Amino acid sequence: MTEIAAHTESTASTGTAMSGAAESAGCETEISQGRRFAFGRNWHQFGHLIDEERITSARKSLEHSLGTADLTGRTFLDIGCGSGLFSLAALRMGARVRSFDYDPDSVRTTERLRAQFAPDADGTDWSVCCASILDSGFVKEQAQADIVYSWGVLHHTGDLWKAMDAACGLVAPGGTLYVSIYNDQGLESRVWTEVKRRYNRSGPLARRLLLSGSLLYLSRNQPARTLLNLARGRAPLGGAAVPRPRGMSRRHDLVDWVGGYPFEVATPEEVFSFCRERDFELRHLKTCRGGLGCNEFVFTLGSGAGAGA
Image (tube, rainbow, N blue to C red; front, side, top):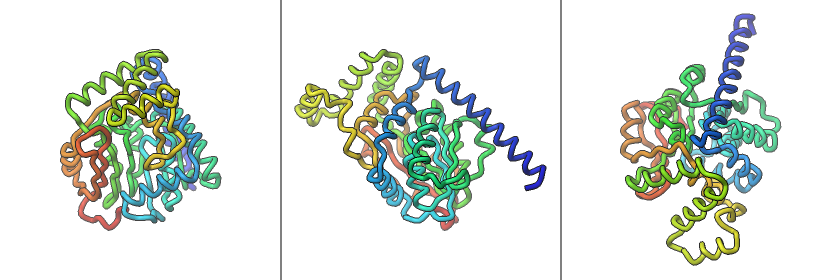
């Protein structure tokens, strides 16, 4: 490495570190002021549940949506890596992975997961840092990736469409954009926004009541079982042991749903139109059939789809 190249790399690393420190402080301030859910704390707790069964489930979901089991030689950018579970799954599929998250607890959880399940991975195989997709300076420094992945994240940034635009710009020519965005349910989505806002401004007792009330509402098709579990103290904090699809946890998904703020939504048509305007072609779509949850999209950039996953 030349002296100039070494200086450039050192400067970039220093800039990223400074940016990460600022993002960390900003995130913690927002959480303390009740303006943001502590996503990272929830992921930290979930991280203790991650095992080979959950890793396999996560990997299978990636393989299904991307249409391949082999990412050898491809780069995978995980925007809002959370627990790091899907970064790990991509690594095991052969990808070179870059992960970042706005929440420092998520970054620490991902680093712990890397140390536990991929101890031989170096910074080239799998890098992790604290940063925001809304930080234009950070985004400009990033190399484009063959696969840009952001599942259930961009709608929690506080500026969904700016985050979407930044994510689109990080996809390499012929590459893949894999995102999931909360479905717009009209009035019901506005009600959930208020529930989430109130959750983050409340104390422990009010939060538990909001969790229990939300669980009853979400489980209204099986109220007897839900009430029994509540009476036994099993819900909303129970049900974490049995993996859900994608390797997730019922308990942590519930807390994430009720507390997840900032919160924005979009219709499938809005996401499709936004990406089409940026020369993306839809390859895979999985909707929540107009109900509550995320719509999942996989796009390929441009007509040269052969370079994507």
